[in-house]
Structure formats: structure tokens, C-alpha cells
Length: 352
Ligand code: PEP
Ligand code: MN
Image (cartoon, rainbow, N blue to C red; front, side, top):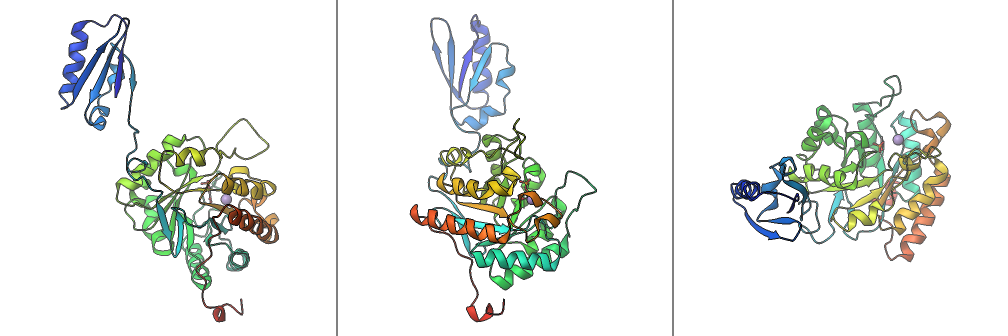
């Protein structure tokens, strides 16, 4: 850490600052320039972070040298890490993963129809919300445990791992019982008690970027989960708020190489919530693959006009299959390939 002092700092103020730093068991290196004095802190930077140095009147600027996150950083883990979602790997050079399914589990028929469609088109994992974070308390809130049960049943039938959101610490045990991957939604990215709880489960976590969160804040939230012992965190870029009102959010594609330059964690992109428009989903999914994402998560509905949640961004199965064809060609051209579901023997599927 480097501390720049204000012009006119007295020797007594400097000595006081040095004394405070040394009291933490750290050493200092003082460099006196013509106009400015700079203090370098030698030793574990974490120790000095507890001290509010910027509150000391002679301190003009505090510049950390190390990143505030450790376990999420490339310094800690120089190779890209990989999460195992059921039998499907995400990250660490594994083939590109497509997670698809409805925004919300609505009925057994709706889930089954959508799950079969995305499975046939080659999606590797199934998504579906049983607990829905809705802006209005009067909107459909999800089927709860019944939704989880339906999701698990069709996932098992098709050999697809299932991803679903956990909104509250009180739901962690229940969701863990049914899901292969626990999703923490954008609105909960900085719910630190929830992050701590999902950090204690043995399943991978899909951590979505908050709609107004910086990349650094996203990585600090991942650090909460990692620090509890759960080392399988997958980050999800799902668009951020801006002044643009023709799309739901603005997809920050630069977040993909930006995160990969500083963290080993896998990154997937959610072009559905990022745009809020079905016509933009496929182009943004292709862009995510081209920019180096490890996968995408896409919402699909057989009757978007009847969807209880997020109909305008849902792809029809036919369009989803077209998108999969394009992604397959692009993934092959890039030498990545697409991840396949862990299919059951064909005999078990011939009647589906
Ligand atoms: C979702 O994926 O179901 C969802 C609600 O997304 P987000 O948290 O990104 O809004
Ligand atoms: Mn949705």
C-alpha cells in the first residue's frame, strides 16, 4: 500500500502515522520528494486495511497495491477454475455451456415442454425459477418447493443438471436438496448473509452481477462465498442499468475479458435479462461466446405471450434451436465446442 501525504505535513504528523502502521506489526518505507512525502507500507496489506487511513488529516491518498479480493484472484489461482454442475463442467477451458429453460416453473406441462425443447436442441443444463424475485408483490412469485420438485424430476429424466435461484437464507437447505447449482440473483448479489450461507453448501453457485454493481463488487461478493469454503463460483454478467431505455439493461460484454484478466472464476452471460428482448438474445449470446465467456443462460418459453414472467425476452423453441446451431458453428470455429447434456441411454429417450 502506498500513502501519499498532503503538502505541509509536519514531522510530528508523519511520526504519528508511522507509529500507527508499526503498531499493526508492519514496516514503512518513507520517500521524501521535493513537494510530497510518500509512505510505502511493507508487509501484509490486509492488516492495514482495517485502519481508516484516509481519515487521518495528513493523508491525501491511499493506493492499495494488492486487490481487495484474494481467493477470487488470478494471483491466488493462476489457472482458470472449473465448476462441476452435475456432470457438466463450466470454465477452465471446458466446452461452452448453454443453460436454458423457462424464467419460472409455471406448470408441469409448461416445464416439460420447454425442457424437452431445450434438451433436443442440445442445451447442457436446465434452468427454471421456483422462487421469483418480482418487482411487484402481486406478480407471480413462483411455485416454491413444488417447482423445485418438478425441475428435479425432469432434470433427472433428461440427464440435465438443474439451476435455480435461492432468494433467502431460509431457502438454502431446501434448494440445495433439489438443485445442482444454486443461483444468487442480481438483487441479492450484495446480500452478504445469503452469500455466506451458500458458501457453506457443497454445490456450485451461479452469482449474478447486481444491476448497479461494479466488477470489483461482484468479485468481492464471490470472495464471500469462496471464503466459506465453497470454491465453485461461476459469475454471471446479466446487464447493468443505464440511461438507454430501448433495452431492459445494457450488456457489459467487456466484463468477460475484464474479469478474466483478474480472476480465475468462470463467467457466463445471461443475454435474456441483459436485453429484455427476445430479438437481441441470440446476437448477444454469440457475442458472449466470441468474447470468451464460458457459457450462456437463456430463457425459453413455448408461449411467451402467456408467460407468467419475462415473456418479452423468452425465445420460442424454434428460435432457440436456431441459436444453438449458430453457437455450435461458432464454438467449433473457435476450437471450443459446445457442452452436451449427460444424456441417458437412447432407449430411455425414444418415447420423449
Ligand atoms: C433470473 O435469472 O431468473 C433472474 C431473476 O435474473 P436476475 O437476478 O439477473 O434479474
Ligand atoms: Mn427471468
